[in-house]
Length: 207
Image (cartoon, rainbow, N blue to C red):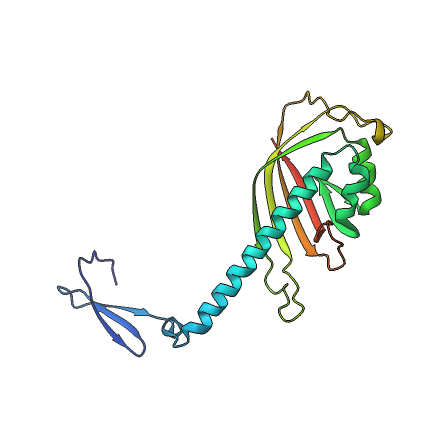
């Protein structure tokens, strides 16, 4: 029927949904309601909600720890040795549109890249559904992490990282970057090591 501006509605509930009738109009608007809306098992739904909330909380803590370690290693003079530890030979890496194949090419990229200083301004983290394993030996979820920030690049790295300046002079203006990670739990990580490794990484400068 044609649209009508309703000032009030009379709603009658039956087993199929709601029927609404305007008090001054003989026309009827039918609204179907999903029966699950009236599910009689609210406890199970609450349990699922709190389990999901716990998963999100674990994911956020894991992402925060990973990003802190990752960018600290990336901006350090010895990054050629430490950054590849976050990856695996089969990791998919794209740096500003350029594909990087494995950790060997990643080391070559880092060797040619000037020193960096990252400033993470915001990040979002989402646990990947179906990736966690509950039980007596639980497995945390895999994570989708998106990062926004700025980075400045300084002089090229020294041939010997041990002789590099402790604090680089950054002459270039900061550039905005977006970076997206897919992180997989590393069940073999030792104490003090990253608890996730990078399955996929895509960085793109903005502007």
